[in-house]
Image (cartoon, rainbow, N blue to C red; front, side, top):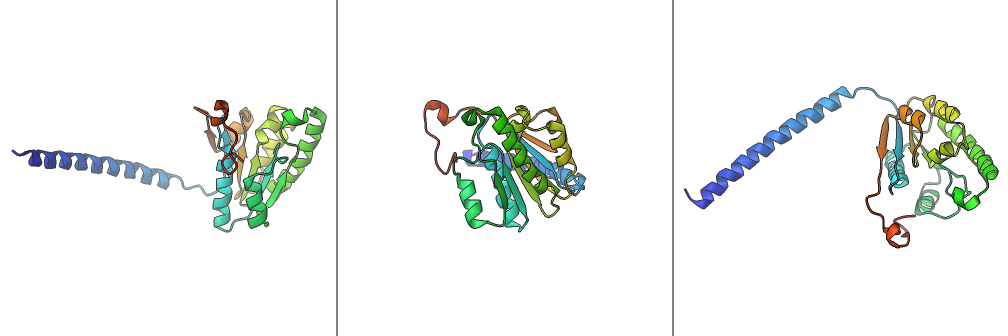
Length: 210
């Protein structure tokens, strides 16, 4: 038996094994798709200490806009420093209901009462977005910090999200989030840092980090 024959037989076995594995995988995927027969909006919590939570949320914003859906965005904490997301949304998609708290990060203000007042004003905007049945997607960026610092009442926030229009999906970002928010969420994704350029002294990069 030649080396070429041995190679051919080995490849045949590998191909047959691969085909059997892919057939099994396809059957599992098809079964999962068939079992998911409930049609409604969902709540996604993007949390963890890693980079990419807000970036993922804005990816879903672009996805929804691509289908012509109505989108609303409220950013808690952010707003002092201009971001690429803000520039793009305001310039290319002015129809998006986009609101920013505008105080910057809590360690910048160092004023608890001022931060609470700003959070409450911002929540009133977010609440209207959640109550609007025309909004296919609502993004509450960095909302978790407002709950962690107790700037907003957790029960009030959770109830509003839970009682939103049934076809509306909500994406919440930020570290933590609390037990009640996790229990409410249909999907919870945690992003963790294995390595981060900033910790190695590399400056935040325009178009990548902001």
